[in-house]
Structure formats: structure tokens, C-alpha cells
Length: 400
Image (cartoon, rainbow, N blue to C red; front, top):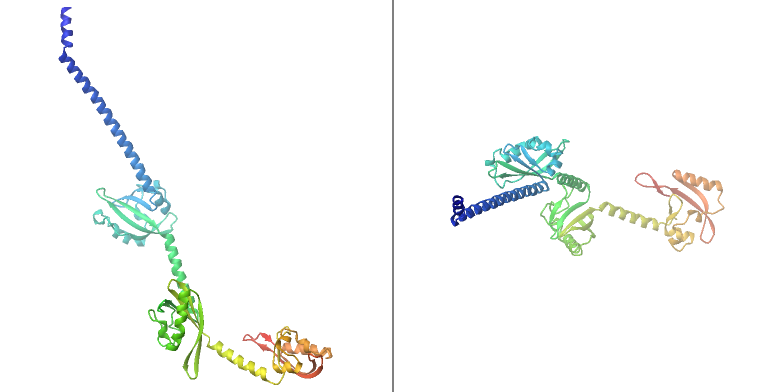
């Protein structure tokens, strides 16, 4: 009994108690440390997973077709936009396809030059290039391609921005512009696109047009004022100012005297088309002016002859009478007869077959002969009638 008591006293001596407490503390803190390390690694793993998920989400939603490729351009990762661009699923692309298999053959040289196939040759801020991508349906998509090397990873980030719609719109714009130019060149009028200083910034193709009446041959950078003599420029300048100041279309006429025997007449317009930009149009109306002059002379001649003249349309409605007609039939003005049926001056006492004969004959060409007409007063009198048809340039009857 005394022997065991000695062991107990030895065990519970203060030195041993301190050693025991130290061991317990070491075990406790070791357990705490292990738990902290496990918790920390777990959180790091969670953060890593979260970060990977975040990067994958960002990678998938860049708005451009984006892939991760090795230095041989084998596709390691691809996003949803690249799926849309190529028409293939990620499972058919990632670690199974090479980017070069999607590139249009005529663009491979340019792409190889960009990638260099060796990361050491690719600049960190490499300039993007335009290439064409062939999709699953063998359709061509136009893209802007940019390569970014990943330092130390021997890999590329490659982005492909689809510009197919822009290309189509650009092509449509080019075609539309070419069509516009063709239409513009076909217009007989002279058309100049000018700035607010009157300088020509665009014009038609004048190689096949006669512009010999202008003082100088028109060209980009030249002033429209220098195309004409000073007296015409003085007419044009205030109209141009009015167009740009009020931002409205301004029309006017002017004439160019080339010699004592020849004068050209023009109808001109300034039309605003944008800020400080307008169109200047010139249309040669010389033929029209000359015809109007001729018509005016003939009109005065017809009005002044002593014979009674009246013109009707195909429906026998009076369109014109001369002064001799008004005097003979007793009318005070044209308003009393123009727009009325010609039968108003034909007597009812003419043989019925005669009127029918006149009608049939004048529709075929002409009729000459005597009949009775009637004045405004109702007085009947004999006349010698001569009819003829008036036809247009297409030989269509327009009046009698």
C-alpha cells in the first residue's frame, strides 16, 4: 500500500501536472490548427470554384465568339457566342477541333501571319484582322479576329466579332450608291453637290455631256460661281445664300447668251441636303422656251386673223376661240363659250344627214363645206366650214 502511494504522489507532483497540461495544450492547439487549415483550404476551394464559375460566366457572355486555344490553335474552351457563330456545340468543339478548320481558305495566310503559330512571335497588343468563318451550314460569316497570348501558359485567347450584318449593310450601301450614281449620271440636268461656300464636293460624270457653255470644266474643289460669267454668278449667289440661311429649296431661271444668234435658257434649284451641304441643279429648258415662244407667236397670229377660229377637244367641247369668232358670233368674252359644247353655235335647221357627215369626216381627218350656224342672239347665218385634226408627237388626236 505504501508502495502504490509513492507512485500516486509522484504522478501528481506539480512537475508532472505541468507536463501533462502542456501536452494537452499541444494536442488542443494542434487540433485547432488542423481544423483551421482544413477550413481555410475548404474556403479556398470554394472561392476557387466560385471564381472559376464567375470566369466561365464572363467567358460565356463576352458578346463575341471567344475561345481558348493552345499554340497549335487546338480549341480548349469555347463560349456560347462561338457556338452561334459556327453552328457547332461546345462538345463538338472543345478539345476536338482546330480553329483553322473554321477559317475560310483564302484568309488562312493572313491568319497564319497574325498567329505566327509561335507565341513568341505574337505581340501582346496585336492588331486585329478581318477574316471569314465558315459555319456548319457552309455559310460565310465576316469577323474581326483578335489574338491575345497568355503569358507563361503557351495559350491564346482568341475573340471573333461577327460583322456579317455590317458587311451586308456596307455592300448594300455601296450598291445603292452605285445605283444612285448611275441614276444621277442618266439625268440630263447638271447636278453639283456643294458646301455653303459654293465649292463643288461631288458631281456627275460629265465626260459624255456637253458642258462647253460653261466657262471652266466642272470639278471637285471648284466654285460654281467660276462656271459662269459675272452677271450670272450675281444671280446665283443670293439664291445660294437664301437656301443655306432659310434651309429651304430655292428655284430660279437664268439665260446664258453665248452669241448674238444663240441663247441658252436654264431652270435652276438649290436644295438643302444636310448641314452646310446642298445640291445645285441646272436643267436646260431652251427647247421648251423656244417652243413656248413659237406657240405664243402662233397664238397671237391665230387670234389676229380675220377668219373665225375655234378649237374643240375630242368631245366637241370648245377650248379656244379667237377675237374674230367672238365678234362674228356676238359674244363679249371667251368665258361665254370656252368649256361649252360646239353645238351651241350650230343651227337646228341643218339637214340631219349633213351633221352626221361632218362628224364622221372630221374624225377621220377633215371636212370642207357650207352649213348654217347661229349667233348668240339666235340669228342664223351661213358659213363655210373647214375642219382639221390637231395631233401630238405620237399622232394621237388631241383637238379639232
